[in-house]
Length: 80
Image 1 (cartoon, rainbow, N blue to C red):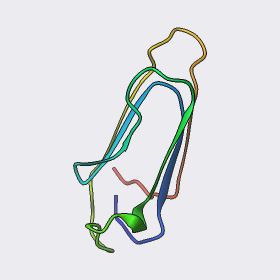
Image 2 (image 1 turned 90 degrees about the horizontal axis):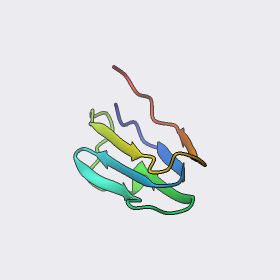
Image 3 (image 1 turned 30 degrees about the horizontal axis):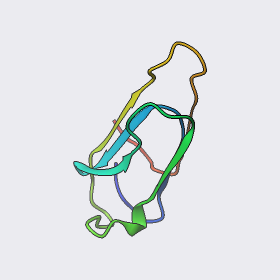
């Protein structure tokens, strides 16, 4: 994604979630648990430079067969 400033990533859900930006772990909600919130304001990450492109990697695992919960909101503009 291209970082332009002001982007945020918000997660609400249960079980494992790991988010890496530029190969750096920025959200770690590993393990079996009830719903938790994970947020990152990209402006708080000092290594990001406006106008540069960065990798975004997200890993999610649902460990139960019932009661799956996941909600993601973001202002990141992804390109493929």
